Length: 251
Image (cartoon, rainbow, N blue to C red; front, side, top):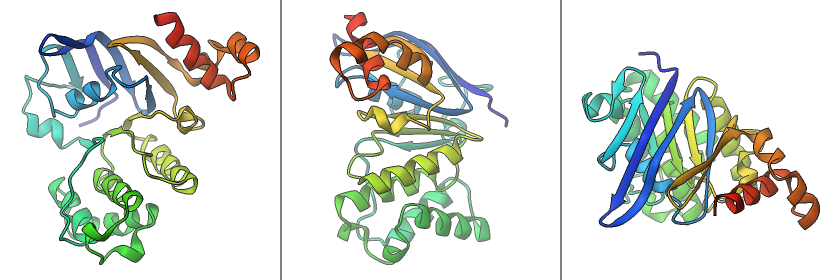
C-alpha cells in the first residue's frame, strides 16, 4: 500500500474532565515533521493516538486508505514504528534478540531480517553489545536499543516521542542521519524539547500549546516568525526565537 500522507482531522481528547487536545488538524507528508511544545501541550497524546495506544474519542486519523477506528488495527500497526517516552524491552534477552524480535513482529524474516538487524545495530552503535543482555545497558544505550527496535523494519510511518533523551551529541547526530534516510520514503513524526534536533532534518514543524495546534509550517517559516524577537532578546537561533514567538502569540 502506498501512503502519501497521514491525515489528522479535528482530533479532540480528554482525560476525565481535563482536555488534552482541542480540535487538532494537520497532515504528515512523506518526510520528517517535528513536533514542539512545552510539557503538557498534548504532544504525547497525539503520538499515542496515532500509534493506536489510545482510542480516538473524537475526530479522525487516516493512513492512506486506512482509517483508525474503521480499518483493522493490525493493518495500521503493520505500518508503524513507535517509540514512546517510556518503553519496555526484554531485559533478560540479548540486544540482538530484542531487535530481531521487533523485526519478526513486523513481518520480516530470513536474510531480510538478519540484514536489517545488522544494519540498525551498526547505525545505533550497538554492534559490540549485540550479545549483551539488555538489562545490562546504560540509559543511553537502552534508548538506542528502543530506537533500533522501532526503526528496524523501516516503517512507513515512524512516531518517535522524545527519541534523543539520553543521547550524547554524536549519537543525536547519528540519529538525525538515520531519521533523514527513513524520511526519504516514510512519514516521520518526532517530538523533542531540543529545537536544534530539527535543523537540517525536518521539512515541517508543528507547535502545540495547551492542547491547541498554534503553528504548522516549514522550518524557515518558523524561524521567520521570530526574527524580531531574536534580535531583541539575543536568542541563540532563529528557530528558537520563532518557537518562543509562536508560543507567546498563542497565550
